[in-house]
Image (cartoon, rainbow, N blue to C red; front, side, top):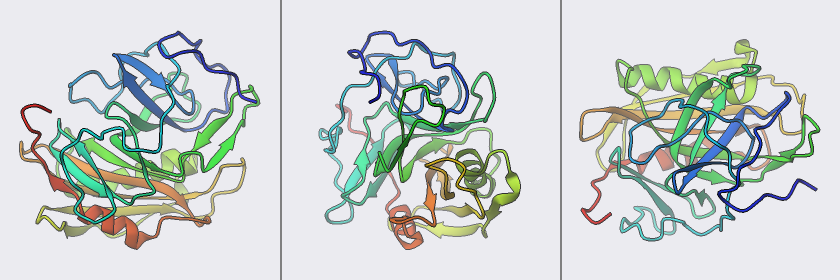
Length: 277
């Protein structure tokens, strides 16, 4: 049985030892960073700042319980596909929909992958505005420290891409980074990339779509699998380079079909928050 978590806001000692999951989920509640899954520190979403990169290590606190209902129920936007759920990112002006069985995380949550073996848990790539499919798809205690870590089947979210030169560069490189970071480290030879293509969503938003996947990942741990990633890159209304991003397990039972991923991508649209939101 995993250790009982203290109440939200109580300090938790930082994790020690190796063998931690490569992926992590972080939430910000009342300006405190909340580590939810893998115990990897170093990513913090601060208020309304537009950051998708590493920050000084926060004090880890336990997460409150999360229901499967939409924690953003006050959102006035409606999904464009009947029966689906909507996610909005007011800071970057992005909205998209996910199927009903996906679990939407609160607005301050982020997911990232870090460099394996790096003492500072260097972040390779991260997303915000996150929804997960089967949040506890696989659970394991690979380093046998008594803490069970959960691996979702798949995740989607959005990302700011300032510093990139074009949507083509984003769609070509970010999928490869997800697959390497989450599934194949330290072996880059198992990562395969697809053709980068022009893509237009149902709202008429134009950008670039790219994909990558892995082949031949060994079942070295309970939750190890091949993986895949899709990224749709575009410019928001402010002219900033941003993207919608998916990554998930491949060649497993319940794998998200590529057709479903593309359908989710077609719902991506520009969005302007109301003054009261």
